[in-house]
Amino acid sequence: LVLVIDFGGQYNQLIARRVRECGVYCQIVPYDYTLDKIKAKNPKGIILTGGPASVYAQDTPQAVKGLFDINVPILGICYGHQIIANELGGVVEHADSGEYGKTSIKLEKKAILFNGINNGDTCWMSHRDYVAKAPENFKIIATTKAAPVAAMADDKRKIYGVQFHPEVEHTPFGKKVLQNFLFDICKVTGNWSMASFVESKVKQIKETVGSKKVLCALSGGVDSSVAAVITHKAVGKQLTCIFVDHGLLRKNEGDQVEKIFKKQFDMNFIRVNAQNRFLTKLEGVSDPEKKRKIIGEEFIRVFEEEANKLGKMDFLIQGTIYPDVVESGTKTSATIKSHHNVGGLPKDIQFKLIEPLRELFKDEVRAVGEKLGIPHDLVWRQPFPGPGLAIRVLGEVTEKKLAVTREADAIFREEIANAGLSEKIWQYFACLPNIKSVGVMGDSRTYCHTIALRAVTSSDAMTSEWAKIPYEVLDKVANRIVNEVPGVNRVVYDITSKPPATIEWE
Ligand code: XMP
Image (cartoon, rainbow, N blue to C red):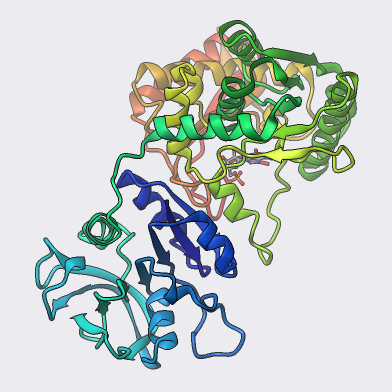
């Protein structure tokens, strides 16, 4: 195990990911994680991350006392590098102008950390503070134009610091630096894989749950599905999944989910058909935020009722993944949309939480899903919002509008798959803007719905670009929709990015 100590930098999740890509298991812990806890984990190496603060300012995150005395190799990155300097007697100063972006590195001395790296290679910097003087016993192993101590090493204590960011792609040799640290300095073996992840999680869940009972709110999305299957592997029928079909799912989705979990995995699976309840609650409501709140609340009510019927359950499984953990950590960001996830469950039901995927990124979750034998289509399912089609039918939601949207969406998805694009586009769907326009079909005037197609590329849904789908594909989709879906006479393609638009229309 390698511990990544988090000082609030933007790329911390990337560091963890790169370490795992080297085949080494790692965990991120907050900067105030106590020394006893760190020692109890028995890490083979420690990485101190970047962060936005200045080490010399007051009340800024510092390393816990004694961290540099426990005989575990340490690599500090950016702010982590400055912490090492500041803590061990070097000097950190504020520069008049910062060093941002690509710069070339000058290797000053032979160093294990830089084995296989060439003088003049490009690294990526993002800092204003800099280490002006390395602590005693440290040798300066690299410099850049603006950083007199771009990297330093104390081989005896195995403590290293780099000012640049080895974890980002703009430092092409970055992975090599991490490999040198992990394999040649920490001496770990790179034999960790998704299979070992599954094995150790299953063991851990077994130990935690014992003979008790576990509940899972299954949405059919990738994360909750993978969390459910890994738990099922650990505790079998002690797990019960509740799947609330709110009638706002895509075409045939409810049946597919039921088939996979009930039949293929033979799970205790309860499908609650609550379509009418949700539609009744949504009657006459057209405000997007109101719709989201109603669905979120009703979801909780239905779930609660079903859970109560089962008697006492001890644990609740959630498919929280690492980016969720990070995003929910932002205290200052504005609410653009109230996200409803099956995660927003009743506060008054007392469960202990189990979140088996908390440390993983989406593509890692997918790799785990494939390892567990979950069908490829489910594992590669695109993100689908908790409130479902209710926020893709603009304005008031009715069964009729849902049906139109569902059919158009199914055609769009089918053609994207036929064109071999389904794993290249982040999200693609049809929505109903709730406007009617005039058309002509078979010599007669029509006055029907417009369907808007939305397809975006993105890496994390925080920003996105509209997908440049070939015209022929769009042409085919539009043709099929007006011909096959009654009540639609016009199809438009949304060509806005996020920001300023959002991915969903509501
Ligand atoms: P927006 O529309 O804000 O969406 O650009 C960003 C991503 O989040 C998804 N989304 C949701 N997911 N519950 C969810 O679980 C929600 O309420 C919700 N609203 C939007 C959206 O599909 C996109 O992937």
